[in-house]
Image (tube, rainbow, N blue to C red; front, side):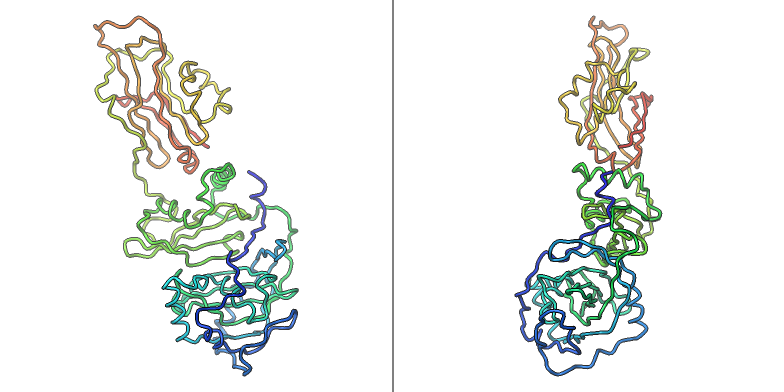
Length: 465
């Protein structure tokens, strides 16, 4: 596997939209945020909007402790203004430097604006911090902004997110909530800022792979990553596409509703990242837990497990799917007592890799020549052929089906009746069908069986790409 996918570095740049000069639709919304205390003047900072000091919001000490523990020891990779990337670990949470009570009336108006299609940056916690950077003494262009976690807050049913801000040599944890409810289309609001201490991780900042995600089949995961390295399976880089594609293994479909409800830069389960996706299927809620097996912006995502489903997590819904079918051979029959010597089947996926294969060397050259102009970059050719025989005989592939990791190729053969005349020549009749290579790469070990119209097995093989 390409070594760049073994790097721990995860460049998190937050929202691509940086608009330090923008302000919300309602200017008085910002004026309503009252300060408890100003940030330390490590750089020239904006003047507080409100001169009067507002008492800190009343918080549950136990809940605050749990929240702090949630982000303590979190490993983050920050991208600074000069594009330098470095790893840090949040080692402690300090005193609160600012508090911003929610003005519900204003929050409701902002939510209405978003629902009208305006101020969409309010749906992104990182963008909210950047757009309000000046109010809190931050610099939207020079400081670093990294999403630490984003999740639904179970007790209150609202969303909660934490953004780590690197301001000069100091760091701060910005806490945000969704005043309405936890949903992808609800606005975010800053409620507090606390000092934070970060340290360099104990391990050197160099490429590494482990520890990985316990319980994952890394033999299979590595092959998926290699497919992405080669420019295939690029949907594996998009968590939502991964949820929709891999969700089919759990009985979900594209008609179901998929919503990201939690994002973690690092978690006890997966240090390279975890995303939880809520799926509403048949009016019931399920959660798909996606993990990142390797570090790097172009590393893949995959499903770790599904909770709340009646199907055992990890157990695919096995149904037979027809990949290819034709009726042009439906009247074919074979009347001779046996097939010509040299009759066989093959699966071809790489001319170079299979050139020295004993089985492939047994395939008649005339059969191979028919495939010379076929591009196998994204395909696998399933081939059936007769040994040297009369052109009165023939062979064709009628149907290809797949069920789980078992692929069945149904072959039809034709010959004249025993007492019928036969053309006196010598040929190697053959037929082939091209199947999407992605099927083999995503399945892992695929058991391929060729059968004729009488269910006789002509050949079988195991393919692992």
